[in-house]
Image (cartoon, rainbow, N blue to C red; front, side):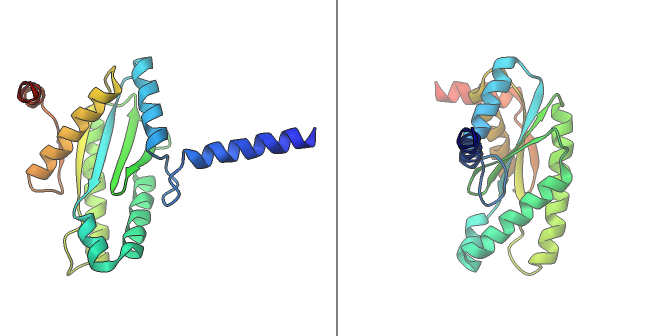
Length: 185
């Protein structure tokens, strides 16, 4: 009996490790994609906040990967403080993060994005006053019935934020999405 319980515990731990980003403790890309897919299939209302840390590679090159890792863990702590317990936090790539806000509007996502930007500016001012500005380009999109459509809209919003000069929060207006699809043919 004891060995079955031990095995189940080990399996649970292995599953958790496979779905967790080791540096931040957030869910990883695989878990994020599975959750986003599940929410899309369920037709859950809400929004996605996609965060791309600006000029992160330059910071890694100038100060080393250890400094970059410290910055990522500091940013993860900032996200934990700013978000609510029902928000789903993920690190989806090296310097890219996502927050899923189930049941919340795009306006709520924009407010969260603005709060993240302000908090990040404060951290950057204290940590690296003479260095490159440490900012994030943030895109917000409504959860759609299709995971890929939600991600595409959020990524276009991040691109819009970067195009406006980085360190911004943006959504992708429907007009821009129509232009994107016409361009892709």
